[in-house]
Length: 442
Ligand code: DGY
Image 1: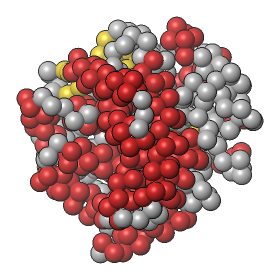
Image 2: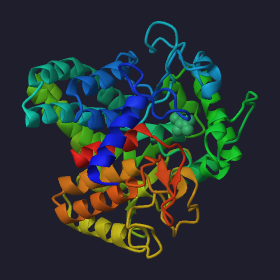
Image 3: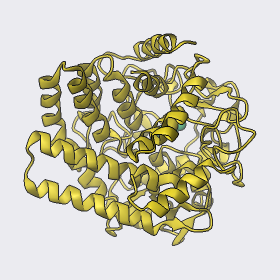
């Protein structure tokens, strides 16, 4: 496929998934609006229509919780109940919380990595670059800024009562990297209580169950949802009761960059000085928190299990969190780039393309077809490309982008790809895959 064909296919995928003002994550597997998917989708949509991209985030923000949380799923009321589990009826009792948005429950009670401010700033940048829709983009930023500030404040307080600079999660789904070996040992410690009978609807939409999390993992996922429902999503209660409580370095790194974007937005909208002081402090604390999670043996940054009080040792793409946060420490940066290009990641000679597998083939939890246990994710390629570019690593960034685009020229717009064969796995026509392709080719 030539670049113009990739663009045309990407546009067609985003059209197919456009639900009229918001975009489903994929045609069948994910029929609702997912939080971080939506932010990446807005980044791509901005190149087609900055107003529509702003609308994507506005639709999500309309469902923000009163405490600032942006829910990980906003459910599509028109999607049939048998299209996704756990759907709105399953979440209903959890979202019967004073913090939930008013009206019938249409969101989950979890959250996902905070890419949103990065997407919001990007919309203005694209409008400025094209000299088109600038005023509308500024109005959007004015409306979105206080909501995004409240979101980041929620993460910096309710999700970080220890003031560590790192985001606490109650469920692997909140990391967006559900079955990654990042969470294996913390999840194994979770004793599953009584769970409702449930059907794995996700398996109806993939050709091979091995591409999705296992039944054992799913039982634990569903049990953790029960725990969260029991707590009515109350953060203070969950900090005490959740059997799964972990510091997520990838979400924390994304938050550092999102706070930088929020600081730029504060400037654009003329936010009060005290907001800027707060955001700057969050950025600093986030970077320090990540530094403390450095593991010299793996040469990566590690998540932390607050229940077991120990680092979660796994060699995964999340370990590059300091690169994503834009570390200013040259030694740390060189070290991470070395690991990224070593046989543990993109330097593995058997890879289809030198693209970072979600889990290192050297990790005991590696499994090349299984969701976050090994496959290459186009959206992660984008995040690393963007981070390398931000660090001034232009050549490395270009190489990554070229390989990632070459992979997408198969036209599947897969959710993820087998790292050794390049086979598209999971869902085809995945919206965020189309969105990052558009951003690369814009
Ligand atoms: C799923 O259902 O697979 C999602 O990752 C949970 O958000």
